[in-house]
Amino acid sequence: MCIALLEVIQALMLRKATFLADEDWIKAPFQLYEQSQLQNLLNLAAALPGILERIDALRDESAQTASKEAKGIITQLVKMKMKFELWAKSFEAESPMAHYWNQTNNNGLEDQNDTLCFSSLSTANALTCLWSVQIICMSHIQDLLARFPELAAFAIIVPITALRETCIELSARILRSMGFVMQDSFLLYGQFSATFPLHTAYHALSRDSKGRAVFDKLRKSLMPRISFEIGSFGKRIPTNGKRNV
Image 1: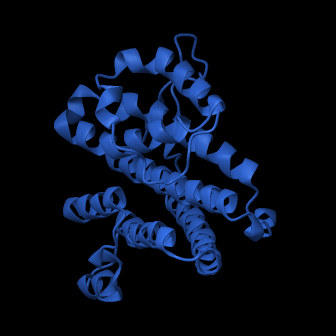
Image 2 (image 1 turned 60 degrees about the vertical axis):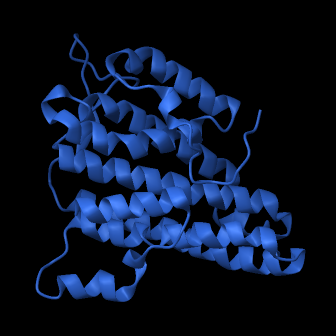
């Protein structure tokens, strides 16, 4: 599982298709055993790097060809967005208990700006992975709609403003998860599993002033408790979007 996760993350960072998206790799290893929820999520996410590679290839196409190809890519991303949402509902339904909740403060009240707690580290990893790929998926829908205004009809199905709001919300959740994930008791495994979600959330919030304001607020309340360097996330989030003021 760890190897599969590493392969998917590397493919996302390199924006190159991975063999894990092939049907043989998705089905053959699990003919005798039922797939875990995390494996199901990785199977869905494995298709995303290939889509990113196709987006990068649009630079070499004529305007007409690129627009036609972009239409197909947006359709794929919208379908992928729906699949991630269905996975989230399925994951939530498998347990009668909440998978995560707001940490309570000293007065026993929930603090919306504080750390999220999870039922387990594996649950935290699954959800932060989900939120990361959802952010990447929705960010690219935004980017393509901005790049190809002739495809604006898609905005009826996936409004750009709503996509951005969701990306900010999911990024905030990831940052609020780090206090739990990076507990000393989880040793290096917690730090390892935090790197990609943190990278994704940081760069997603850096895209515009509203996102940067959210990051600054959470950084003041959460980051002093988390030992990591923002500068270590120098490599860009897997998106080709430009920052907006």
